[in-house]
Length: 255
Ligand SMILES: Nc1ncnc2c1ncn2[C@@H]1O[C@H](COP(=O)(O)OP(=O)(O)OP(=O)(O)O)[C@@H](O)[C@H]1O
Ligand SMILES: [Mg+2]
Image (cartoon, rainbow, N blue to C red):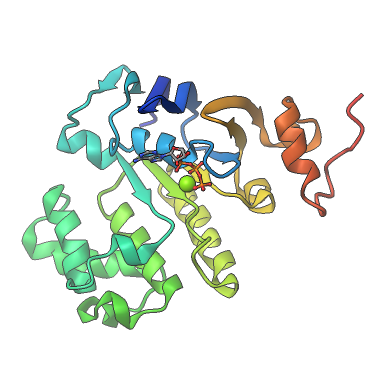
């Protein structure tokens, strides 16, 4: 089943300051949308509004014909899951891996209690972590492995939409590629629609179908990947690309 997710006219105010200013964005099912823009432009704020973690001052998030209201149901929460930049902050250090995954599985009634252990093992296999990890605690793992566990928890509840907000920027460079590869594989295997936030345009180019560009709380461009990387529509998109020394496809000729 493919349901289109839409953010409509989203505004988030912090006092006088608009972190998001009437942002509308549509996610085509089973595609990856890359969200780029300078620090502070509102990318994470938009991600959190879509995930239901922040209530916007204006606008709404729609899933198909359903409006996801300010108090989302458990079923609505389940559909949109998020992976954060820093797995340390998102995993409870006092819970074993089994407890972390079981809590998500049981809260969202994904399996019966008797099947939890089996499902936890399947989830770990999906994120390429050995099942002996089940009785261990987050601090016993590397940063990359912790991010895999956070990803396992996100997919445990069988979402249709996954948001990854700079999922590799807190990790060692040597493991970044394998985490991106994992997200990309899961996206295909599980038919996910993905919102992927990154400062790294090479990564955006490698895994996204569509590129959206934010600046100062406004969306200034939404283009197919190839269009963005060859002939960006916005002057700000052009600026972002010009700042990357090794963008081979990018033509400097704007005529
Ligand atoms: N709780 C808050 N209270 C006040 N201002 C906030 C709050 N959260 C975010 N902001 C401000 O809103 C703006 C957008 O923040 P946001 O985190 O969405 O940016 P971002 O594009 O994700 O940046 P980065 O690339 O650095 O992660 C920033 O100016 C930030 O300081
Ligand atoms: Mg951010």
